[in-house]
Structure formats: C-alpha cells, structure tokens
Image (tube, rainbow, N blue to C red):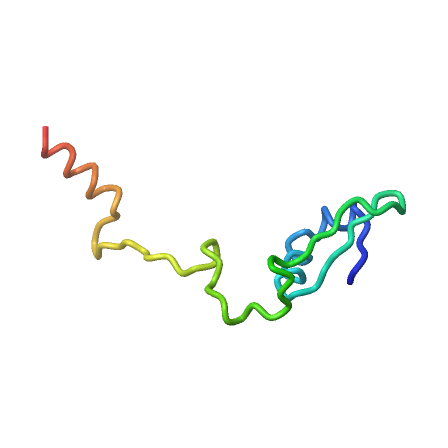
Amino acid sequence: MQTVAFTEFRKNASALFSVVEAGEMILVTRHGKEIAEILPLNGSANREHEATPSWKAKRTKLTVPGESLSRLIVKERKQAR
C-alpha cells in the first residue's frame, strides 16, 4: 500500500491511477488523517486477462483520401437541398 498526501495526489493523479491499475492500493491523507482508499476493482492485482478499458481501446479513424470528412458531409448536405 502506498500513502500519498492529498496535494500530491492532485498533482500526480494520472500516474497514481496507473499504479492502482497495476494492482496496488493507495491511501490518501490530508493533514495526516486518512481520507480515502483507492483500490483496484475486484481487489485483483493481476488484471491482464481482462479486456482493455473502453477509454484505452483503439478507435476507428475515418478518413477519405483527398478531402476531409467534414467537407464531404457539408457538400452532401448542400446537394440534398
């Protein structure tokens, strides 16, 4: 378990959540008093077998050679009138 002051947690939240994803628990303190525990879901230290979280999944990139997709949409809307 890692203990972190609240101000340090605010400054380094992204890195600390990566630590939690790796399976470690974090105890957050303010003025020396414990205020929160952040722990991995299901208490699992090894989550490699689970699917990638949706916010980290690869996205399909829509591209059309030559013109931007937004310009093609605008052009199609004008033609539909």
